[in-house]
Length: 102
Image: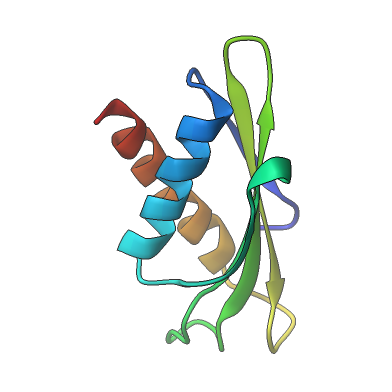
């Protein structure tokens, strides 16, 4: 994942933010901070066989009848994430989609 990944959802930003918090918790990542007024969540992943873990941020930006979610990351150690950041973002996006439907 060279830069932030972005996906658009056809739901209000507050519902998507709640779904994102639930998704991050379901994946058992550590939530460091939540800034609801600005739609920002900072979280950390655990170590894996691919990396020492990642510090990630998720930003929900409202739009006309939809909102976009952007996920970015910073490696804690090392120079490459070997695709782990994109994999994590994909899992979070999938769970957001699932959680907004329920």
